[in-house]
Length: 326
Image (tube, rainbow, N blue to C red; front, side, top):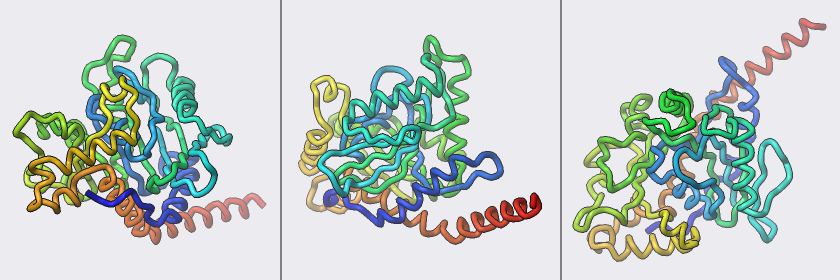
């Protein structure tokens, strides 16, 4: 198991966050292709539980059917001062220290953008969270892939969600975080099938296997973790997050983290002494957080020269227009 979540070059990711805010004002051909982690998965894969586990706090809306109806652009930062975690929304600069209030504001902003029904919208909800011990990450949580509309949804909602996911996934600088349930055939994973359309070699895709504790007795996902089934250059990480029963019983993210650690360390396969590399490199939310931080920082540093050139060219073009106006 990896050590507790650590911060990797938070200053680099802070710079990326400021660029993201600038990029949000640009459209079409002017849009900047910035490094970010794009979260893909079906409605039942456990995307929300993975994101909350990475954050270390429960803050996302929950429910049945489609809950995420707008992209959530999440800038996650470690809290460096003060005694309470807090969130700041892009549309409202006032800090919110109550995570339940953050949850309600996400719901309210989603209704304002997408309507109070069950439709979706491509305009993102922007949120910056400062949480003690959190990794420095920029994530885009997207609506879960679905094939059958529920009552109140447009008939084409499945196609629109797919198009929205591909819109973000096509960014060549995006890291695709594909969330799939470990107890379901990987060949049917909506997330991996989507990612393969824009990243067929799997060069910028990392797989997350949720519900590793719900696999049938005597089975495991070790072969997938060893990249022997559906190979990805960035590999896979298995996690155990809060399930519906944990939520119903009031289980916290912290208690789920302890439960996850105990599960992997005591498992006959993942925790076996001769397979300690599997445990250390491919199991647990701390391992996933560390991998994602390192990947995002590396992608950001690699993109800097091209982004600097692009931004300079656009500034020069605006200056030229201003001079022409006298």
